[in-house]
Image 1: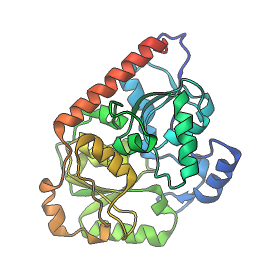
Image 2: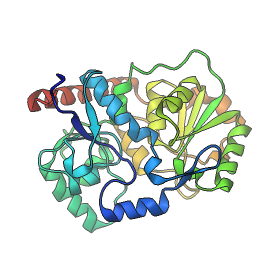
Image 3: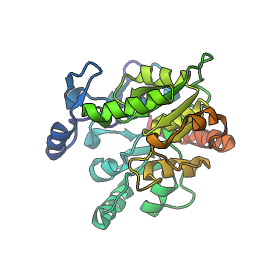
Image 4: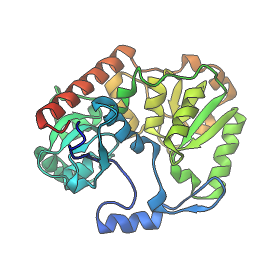
Length: 304
């Protein structure tokens, strides 16, 4: 990309973007706390997994590639995260989708609207087979979470020190939840990082870890590409299944049954080397396919 080429308009999730209704909901519900206990307002909140998106795109197209955040109606490209619904409902004709996924959609009316909306998009790849199935896409549809493009580029550190619990930023909303979480982590000789922590810090913590327990999908994907043993954490005691994890796991042949943090024992983490892993060949194949469709689309569109 030359200096005179406009920046690529990339959508990734950030609070206080989108419709007026969405901004009101964000303002009401997305307050969190910093490590010193001070309130963090929604417009300052960042989510580790989503913030990987511009870095991954620059990695594929060249580090000098200019990328800027764009709200859904103005975006050229959607990649990482459960943002395909936003693309289907808000993005313009021909917008590229490279590995985005759906959240769990329980409303048939909403699903119908999303299915109609994706027809105007350029669906280069979706995150996994669960998203493909919900949308009724062909079996030939390319699958893969874009964070798999980090395969071979993120390497675990040599000095390992205990485990890491990657917790969703919502765990910092109240002191009682945070205290329980950190107490369980301490019991397992683990540190806690939150998805709202700075991106480089989260990556470094996963890189130093002997094992990872994560309620963040991209905590799992990053651990997998670093070849660090990892297990998903369940949202509640009633289910070991999570649509996001199932979608990703189906693309790389990975067991993604989740567990509760309080049920993990010291014996479990001492046996971390035996935890489920993705199929290494499938990880490489998925990454190669994502690289291919990404390079082809940008070459044809003239955006890079």
